[in-house]
Image (cartoon, rainbow, N blue to C red; front, side):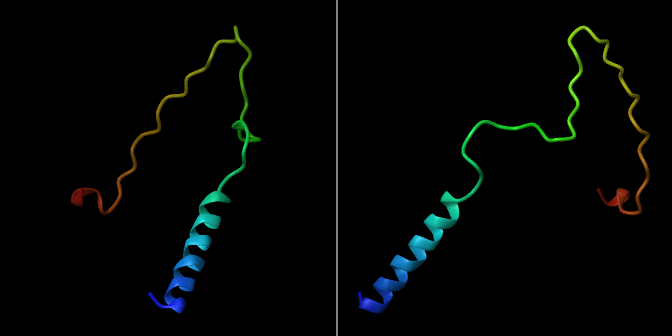
Length: 61
């Protein structure tokens, strides 16, 4: 193995490890800011499902 290919292998390995280790934040999960939680004891209102809309490619599926 030549010194150039060894150096390339090391640099690529460091780049991959750096990219993978920097994903996300450490800590507990946080809910989205727009989420609304209901109080326990409040009745939950169920919305009826929306009717399916036809799409031009539906017959292909």
